[in-house]
Length: 86
Image 1 (cartoon, rainbow, N blue to C red):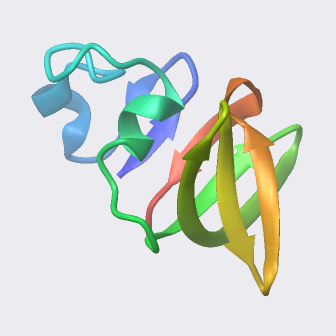
Image 2: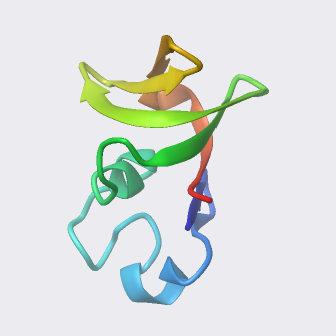
């Protein structure tokens, strides 16, 4: 399952969710996919030409919390260009 900025959902979710969560709950962008996954899920987040792979810890004040090798990264949702879930 993937989210790519300006492209909607990837994988099996493209038709089912109408891209950007449209038919499902009205959420848009990375927030749509993040609201559907469980805490602790391993995800890959692409932002500012960087990729971080780690455990999803949730969303706080417009930032995604990602645990990578014992370090917590705070990534602004507005800067995210893609999210992959292996």
